[in-house]
Image (cartoon, rainbow, N blue to C red; front, side, top):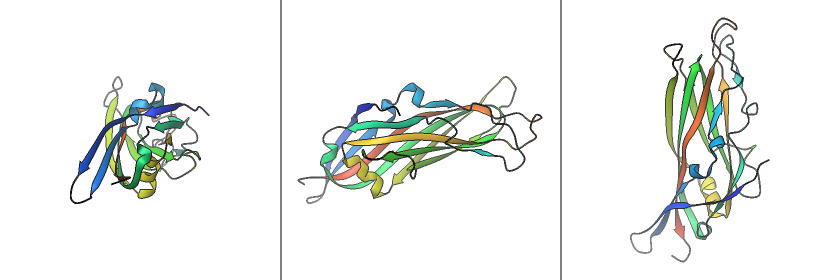
Amino acid sequence: MRIRRRLLALTAALLAISGCGNHTLTLNMDIYSFLDPSDVVTAIEPHVPPTPAPGAWISEDTFPPLVDDRHIQLVSGAGDLASVRSVTFRIAVETTDSTGAGADTLRVYLSGPNQPPRPGTPVVMVPLTFTPPVGPASAAFDTVKITLDQPEAVAQLFTGSEIRLSVTNSVRGPVGVPGVDPDLSGRVRLIQLDATVVAGHKGF
């Protein structure tokens, strides 16, 4: 297991004061910027052959994770948050389909510093669709963007000193006749992953 500890920059921190004693701290965390180029793209290899309906799923455990238990340190100050009110994830994924049709699911896992993200329940699941290209010399591109509010249990992870991150994908191959219809081949690329945490601050 590769472990790399990095400092997660708080790309923007705005302290908003409204009402009597109602103080909130909004932290925008650009998680994507701290991933290596190899962490954000994966090819569908080997190609997924067609099978009779409804097509076969290839488990996320078959492919190497895009992000494999990355340790990300939070700056001091995140731990001063007393009451996390909400956390919202924004994620964008680009798919490239070279041949065949199919589907994929990108999953994002988070945990605290004392346990691995997987196995566990993903905090974000992004369904993806591969549409065959129009011509044999072309490729079909699609971008899926999701904004998702998270439960308090996930938000509380951002009050600690460190979070751990894993990202996986699983593929469903095309429906068709093996050896006759084209295999599914393509690429999945993560192009955005950030979080906005809204919380109260100690002492307010």
